[in-house]
Image (cartoon, one colour):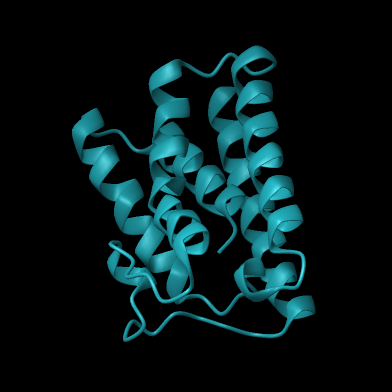
Length: 142
């Protein structure tokens, strides 16, 4: 999954889950694993990996800025969005070190049943998840 999908999932979970923040943190980390099971298209094997990575990062950052300034989301909630996407840093580090580098997050291990599909349906699934999570987040902020 793209980082932005994980960020929006973390935001949505934080916005509607009435449990202590430490429990929300565990839930958003678990959501990363569950989202990685969903068939999707990852740009990590694309020809323009660096460009896709920057687009993903900048869209995620812009989303957090909008959530903070336009929607008034508290910093702890933004932190849950960041935490949800944070496991993907091991993909970045692996990419910088070389493709054979071991990843630390379980859903990024080779033996994990990571969901995969072609670009069009794979991106469409991710856009649908982002749209649903954004709707949940905005509704919870209203």
